[in-house]
Length: 165
Image 1 (cartoon, rainbow, N blue to C red):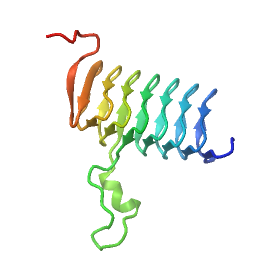
Image 2 (image 1 turned 30 degrees about the horizontal axis):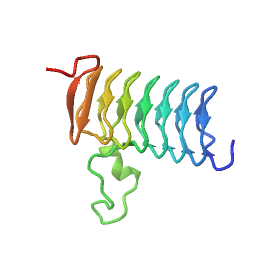
Image 3 (image 1 turned 180 degrees about the vertical axis):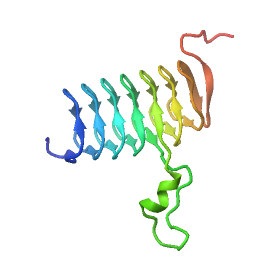
Image 4 (image 1 turned 90 degrees about the vertical axis):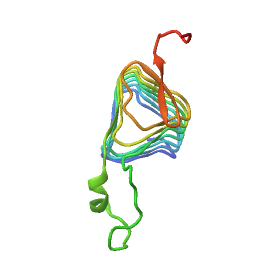
């Protein structure tokens, strides 16, 4: 592996994967011909499909599945705990056993695109071919082929639909 790239032994890398410097990958799988930008972290039990582009400074946490042909813009953040806590009921720092009941999975459908600096809350499904605008905060499932934007993100129109009303 290249200098300044941290790839754990349990990572499954497909053929032709391109890794920029300063990536941190552990316990995840990356499909063939995917490109991972600088300063990206992909955690255990996350998967990225084939022919995806994960732009710099993005965070893909445990439980996120990104299907084939997806674009993830710069600084996109995924969340897998919608009610995070620092300490448990005994006042001690949380461990995985404390957090596990709140853990939720997220799926990004084939060919979807997520704009820079978007935040995707846990438990969300973004449908195939959907487009999420830059800076959006996605709090609801996004149907396939729809364009969503804003905070919270809301439906703008279907892809290919005229902008005029």
